[in-house]
Amino acid sequence: MPVNAGWRHKRGSGTVMRQRSFPAATPDGDDGYRTVPEARIIAMIALAGWAHQLDDPAVAPRAAAVLQGWVELGLPCRKTDAGERLFDPVEVWVTMKRLGCAGEDGYFHQRYVATGRRLASDRASTEPTGPFRLDIRRTFHLAARAAGQRLRLRLPLPLERVHGQRSIDLLDEGIDREAITIHPDRLELRCAPWARTLALAARLGFAAPRDTSIGDDRNLYLRPREGHVVVSERIHDLARSLAGPGSTPAGSVGAFWTFLIERFVCVPIHYDKVDPAAPCDGLLDTGAYDCRLGAALFVALCRARGIPARINGGYLLYRHAPTPHFWAEYWCADRGWTPVDFLGWDLSGGGADRVWRDHFFGRIDARLVTEQLPLSFTGAPGVVIPRQWHMLQTATAGGVEIALTALDGRPIYADLIRLLD
Image (cartoon, rainbow, N blue to C red):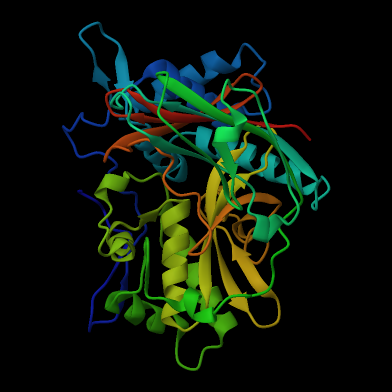
């Protein structure tokens, strides 16, 4: 993948810092990822920039004008034989943030960042401990499955070990409830599919996360390899360089946070381009991360210095835009598990606003936690995920839809989430 690296670390020659820049989301001339129709991209732009005003009929035309402006400033697209424009959503968001940080377009700061801050402020103004209620519905598309093939379909739930007592009311989707099992971290349906689509749905009630004790063997959170967390020799060298001699755990964590905010860009990632053998090393080459990979790199740096750390996954509980999300936690002897969330990169306009930059350093707002690695995770959803895919978040039916689709447009699964409180 051609990139302009934000920085590079060369073994044996120290850390060489360079001007932060944005990766090329899609190689020039490669239309393979440009498969999403313009109308869906406009809906994505509308939710991210006008989440509180989606009932205003002027929003869709304004979002369309924003997209056209980006095309005129160089955003590539592909045209079908019928003249329809197709886009790569990762490329769209990378272009949006690059143009915004360069001062060439106003949507990033005036709409995207401002909306994110309002969403965070709205949640901060409400009761932080809950109880919270939401409806979640996951629709699985099963056309590619062989007849009679048994499936294990999964829907994430609030983690029992984190949220404590929960209420889980199954919603009627035409499925025998006796076939559904409620686990501490997920709903699970085992069946032979009888239709081209099946859905699991539930109304959930839960309190804010309350887990502050390390509880388990601390060595679990120091393991050098765990999914996207890989503590390579290069990561060890970098952690030592950033922390400095005689650094305290708090000092090391602060150095890692500053480094990741100031020397990287937070943008969507094509996961088929991530090297599974050394994903964190790859981030050092591209200078870019998304929420999951940024959390993984932070955790890897902490573990390289003997600081227990882990990744949490779940959902932001923003009424107008509930969103799947990942963040990190490190173990602090004085505070217990302490969160850090690189959503601060966006809220601060790329690190420019100091207060918003550190808004989620050492604290977060209330979240729905569905995964806490390595012990608790939802697992595979139960449908085959292709190597290359798109994820789009758009507003629908009084809530938000998060849809995973193959590059050819084939739907894989979609979550519909509605906040009720």
